[in-house]
Image 1: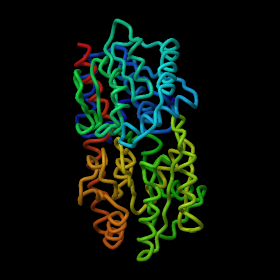
Image 2: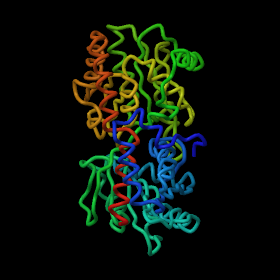
Image 3: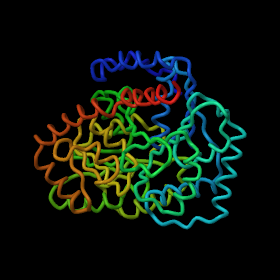
Image 4: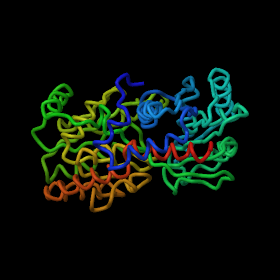
Length: 402
């Protein structure tokens, strides 16, 4: 947890007016209750990043918030990565032995972890079977962060056996919800505007970071920040850049890294580097999980930010970029379509050619880029800040435990 985590009062200067007072009043109704979060990693990926900021804020509001992490081996995370791909619609081969090992790791984690709480929130498929070991007291909620709109049926049928044992499920979008005999809620993920990744940076700080990363600023920067994952379509971004390059002298930066629960990252990174070839204007940056200031600087230095995902649970890099006043071109999928207001804060696209066309259009209209950036920042302020997320989780705590 951050030692210097901001208190809820610090958000008065960035959140919409009245937000902090509302949170203080709402928290009075659940003061002292234990809210436990469980996921599969403390670093890498949006879930860990959100919990790292959200749990201290809950404690500041006198909620007894905790965060536990299950432990797994390489075989376990290979299985859960296959789950992730299958649940987002890509056919996978998953054997009975893989399923049994997955359950075995969860049984071992259940024996090790303290799973008591007034509300226990289990994040994503990796720890979903922990519900089998739930104590008699407390409410349990399964929080799904991925796109579950068209899952591989066999894998969803297997996972559903655990999900139906929860008291409720939470999804990022209505389209991700499934037919379940338990209540379902929608909660958008969020960014923390005061975190190292999103706080204001001086021009000097930005240039210092880019110098250390070896990123020149002599031409417009097109940027995609994401894990090296095929669903993020980094090779498609390279192909779009190559179309744009015929008309505009630009530089492409693909910045990302891996997560401890994603064993495919190294293979995808190798594919991206091969696709980039020896083009000096394509920079592929493999960053550590804590490279928050570097990502902040890259997003602030970019002319246009891209998130050309083909499947996406939510894609918070879109909100991060809009908070920094940048127009965003994203894949027309998942939570990206909820964040980008088409033609107002950016564009959603379905192809390499569509992305290239919109990049060229924006580069030729700098006034439009500025207006989109300003509209995007206000859209994030109203809908995707951590204070909004905190309001939704406190409301859930009130609703399920009162």
